[in-house]
Structures are given as C-alpha cells and as structure tokens.
Image 1 (tube, rainbow, N blue to C red):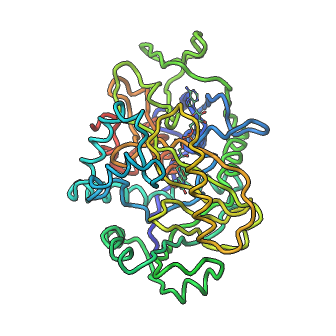
Image 2 (image 1 turned 60 degrees about the vertical axis):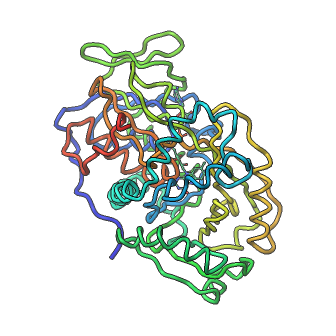
Image 3 (image 1 turned 120 degrees about the horizontal axis):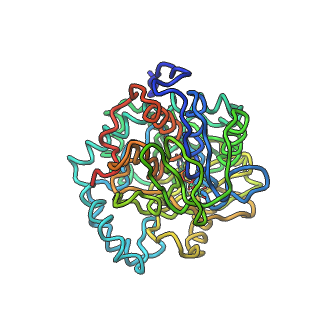
Amino acid sequence: MKFSKPLCDLPLQSPRGSLHVLIVGSGAVGLSCALWLLKTGHRVTVFDPNPPLEDIDYRGACSFGNACSIAYGAVTPVAMPGILKDVPSMLTNPLAHLSIQWRNFPELIPWLLQFIRSSKSERVLEIVNELADLMRLAEAGIAPLLQESGSQHLIRNRECLYLYKSEEKYQQAQYGLQLRASQGVRMETLNAAQIYEREPHLTPVYHKGVLFLDAYSLESPHVYMKNLAKSILQRGGQFVRQQVDEIVLGDDHVQLRVHGMLGECADQVVVAAGAWSKKLLYADDQVLLNTERGYHVMFPDSGKLLTTPTCYPEHGFYMTPMMDGIRAAGTVELGGLGAAPNLKRIEVIEKATRQLIQGLGHSSDTWLGHRPSMPDSLPVIGQSPHSKRIIYAFGHGHLGLTLAGITGRLVAEIAGGHTLSKNINALRPHRF
Ligand SMILES: Cc1cc2nc3c(=O)[nH]c(=O)nc-3n(C[C@H](O)[C@H](O)[C@H](O)COP(=O)(O)OP(=O)(O)OC[C@H]3O[C@@H](n4cnc5c(N)ncnc54)[C@H](O)[C@@H]3O)c2cc1C
C-alpha cells in the first residue's frame, strides 16, 4: 500500500467568500499557498524582491537549490536521541556534516536547548507521528500543483536510496528505520550485489542499502518554482517585487509596510518568507526559527552516472541526478543568515562525491542555501495568537519542497474557513 492518503477536493468557493490575501515570500511554500488560494476562489498578491519569474536571480531562495527530493519517508526529526553527544564535535569541527559556527553560538542557545529537548525518545515519537501524519497528506497537497503548473514531466526518479558502509553503520540506522517502518513507510533492503546492479558507477564502499519506495525526485526545483509562478499569473495572481518591512493590522483589514509606505488593505496575510520570516512576526509574536545552512555542488556532465537519488547518512548530503547533471546537496551548518559561504564545506562535499561516484566529471555551480528550521523539525502552520488575519507558514527545514503543497492547501483551508484536512495544533507558531 502506498504511503500517501487521498484528500477530497476543496470546494471552489470558500465559506468566507472571496478574500484578498497578501503573501510574503515566493519560495516553494509561498508559491504553493498562492496557487491553492487562487484555486479556491481568492485574490492573491505575492511580495518578494526576487520571485522566480523569467530572468530574475532566484538563487537567494532556499527553494532554488535543494536536493530535489520529494522525501516521503523522511518522518524522523534531525534531533534524534543521542544528538547531545555530537554537540562538542559540532562546535569543534567546522567541516562536520552537522556543525555550529562559534560566532552564532550565543544567539543560538534557546534554539539549541529546544533542539536537544526535542531529541528525547518520547518527544521523538510524538514528532514522528506528527511528521508522518503530515507526510501522508503531502502527495494530495503537491500533486494538484504539479498538474496545474504542467510540471508532471519533472517527476524523474521514483524511489530514493540510503547507503551504509558497514554493518555497524547499518545497525546504527535501525532505530530510525524502525520508526519509519512503524509509520508504514515502504522500504526494501538491498545487499551490495543488488546495489551494484542498480548503480554500477557508485564506488563499492557500500555494505547495505535501503530503498524508499514512495519517494521521488524532480528534474529541477527551480523550473518547478518558475512553473508555479506562471500558473499564479495565469490565474490572475500578482507579484510585487518588493521586500516587506512590517505587517500592520487594522480593525477590519491588514496591510504591509514596504519602504515606509503602507500598501493596499487586504483580508489576510500569509508570512512565508522562509528563514527570514522571524523579521516579519507581528508585535510580540515569538517563534524559535533559525537557519540550517546547506550547500550544493553541480556535476553537469555526469547525469548518466546515477539513476536513483542516493544518500550516505554519514556524509549528510544527497546525490541527485537531475536535468542539469548530478547535484550533491546537503549538510547542516548552524551559521546564521548573514555570513558568506564556507568554501571549505563545498570542497568537502565535492571531494566526498568524487570518492562515492566513479568517473565524475568537472564541477560547476556551487550554492549556499538557508533552510528555515525549527528545533523540533516540524513546520509552523497556523494563525498568529494576535489575529486570525495573519497566517504563519514557514520553518519547513529539510522538507520544504516535500511539504510545501500540503502547507499551501492547509493555509487555503485556514484562510477560507474550511474544515481542516488535519489537526494543526502541534504546528502552532507559539508552541515553545
Ligand atoms: C542543501 C539543501 C537541500 C535540500 N533538499 C531538500 C529536499 O531534497 N527535499 C525537500 O523537501 N527539501 C529540501 N530542502 C529544504 C527546502 O529547500 C526548504 O525547506 C524550502 O526551500 C523552504 O522554502 P520556503 O518557501 O519556506 O523558503 P525560501 O525558498 O527560502 O523562500 C523564501 C522567500 O522569501 C523571500 N523573502 C524573505 N524576506 C522577505 C521579505 N521581507 N519580503 C518579501 N520577501 C521576502 C525570499 O526572497 C525568498 O524568495 C533542502 C535545503 C537545502 C539547503
């Protein structure tokens, strides 16, 4: 049985009639919210200085350069039991696949404390339940958007492969794999011969593999984002190329302040500005959002060397074949929003990829992206405690491409006053 669960169609009219909704941010989450809102009869204006429209540089958005994986099965949080013992190496080794930059340490402390609290076994079980619940609805959230935006041809690989170099590494992964299995995630174990048969260009440093049967990848997340933006325009949605400074609430409306000027009055606002969303919180709303920086390196001539998106968890990055070649993407660096890329980390990813795939050609594009991350690996989806006119939708961490569609649908349900497809209490903004 497939991991995904169907949802009934959302009515074209919402119980609250047609609303004007302002959306801040045109990453995967903002665009998915915009399209779902348009599909359910609302008027939408998206604010972003750099939306994914023709010729605009979209590289600043995390949705530009991710590992392209629709990762059904990724229902375990980043903070798993035992993470505490990794904190010293996170602090002392800036090249570890999970690392913390010292200059960010003081401001990171509240986030780190909750991160560590979230790693307790009983809390991990709650998070896994919640993530799995959301993940089972993810296909019902993204499939209508892939279809409407003409992006179904971007679906490339069904399945995704995790590899382990030794029996010890495989055994260490069992706790997480069993948690996934307990939620009905479909997996198949492969031995070294089966891995070789599937992927003959991988250097045979693997011992065993696990194939996630319901995952798939997209040929290019950037092209998907461009397609979503085109569909939004086709449905009458508008883009405003401006950075929003502030949300201003009136008695019966909401407005955005841009360059000191107040904009049009609207019924609702959705904050979907990814890792930058904290700056836009209303009044004294508090959210423990931080950023996990991640990188990618492209190998443009090597696309034929791999068929399945592949990850060695110990290296912390995916190798995904896509339309532009192979993309090696991942690792986690708790390093804040402003700092320059750490070029040494890019070198580490490139070197490791060369060790893992034989005959890899030259590398080209490299990229730093900012994941919007909550300490418990659950996104924020819900209204501000101050006002139902303000909806927060950010903090999707490692799963923003996968969960953007269902987030968009839930946001359309909240805004329009529909019955929610899922209880979102665990995702409320002020849960910490
Ligand atoms: C290396 C790496 C690999 C990844 N791999 C995967 C994967 O395989 N699968 C998966 O599901 N997820 C993956 N992710 C995570 C995923 O990319 C993110 O969770 C997702 O892109 C976040 O989308 P978003 O819309 O919240 O934010 P973003 O894509 O960052 O978009 C935020 C937008 O808000 C705009 N903005 C910011 N401030 C303002 C403002 N004040 N006013 C107006 N606009 C503003 C920005 O310009 C930006 O366009 C990966 C991430 C990284 C870094």
